[in-house]
Image 1 (cartoon, rainbow, N blue to C red):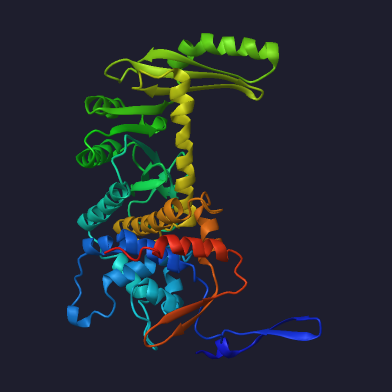
Image 2 (cartoon, rainbow, N blue to C red):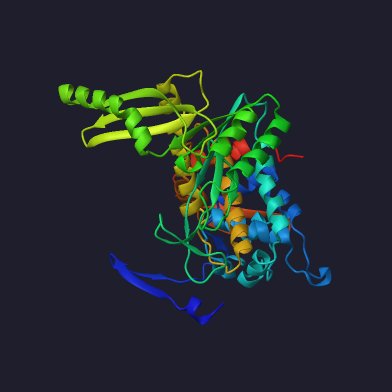
Length: 446
């Protein structure tokens, strides 16, 4: 223990009593609720599957920290809000982190330091990253008890701002800064793909290849499943749409406005304007068009939303293969629901630190993105299963972390037991017990 830890901190008095603090409380943890997340991983086997994808070039005789332990250490650290590798220089001494990493806490022992974890990030090969990415698809498939009738795959790119001189770093005019352009694929709230890309590309680059790989694997598991591709106007590429049509994949894709589309929709907007002028109430109508851009191979169904708001006209378009649904059903019942994906991306980017791309190596930054993805899968599985019906059933990651994971506890270690004495004043004890019962009542999986 350092001298600075022993030195007391003096605060303002309470009544006539002095208030002091120090860092000599002993074996304590501020993340007692992480035990729930550990039970989720034990049921999924997620970290074990990720560890199986890694090769270890180190000399076995000199290995002190195995890769499975280091993966658990970092993934749980991200889930618990520790975005910086340097945090682990202290967290490695927290006995709860040893439990999370499936390593018996022993006096004087510690987990991997920040430099050791950094070396792990920087030795991952491209073929290993492909295997790691496949784990998330397998986890998604395993989450279903019976074959689903339909899957809606949401594709969306976003930006990861960059600072410093990094590999494959480019300036992006739309985002107005240097960034990466990762591609995310979600099905509902479940993550399937987190693929890091440089930003000097078309937003739809590799989307068709990713979709093909996903469809082949999903159809292998469920041959009769109906698959719908959903994306914004960045994915309105005729080759992607043609591939969907040839492979029984429906699509609903945003379509950017242009002069031809505006001319075709002009009568609809004029009618909406006239209706608004009569009632001064919002007018929202949907209409069918047949449209083909000059680069497309054929005409396709386009739906125009002719909307007049008090703020002004709002004209939008989507292109779709859904010929059996009315325009309103396609737009409001299908397309606009993709907006929830933005919340999922926000959770991973801002709350699970997927935007922490500070490694010089591009491959290391892709590995970091996958570690964040693993943390997301653990928290999302907890929310979707154990939190169902509780007050946290629809909570975002930050709220779950604050209310469920950040629980103060005193850790008592003996030869036979590790006991966490959780805070007596913890306000969600009833919910915590309910979640623990759901995760542990039937015992750990075989």
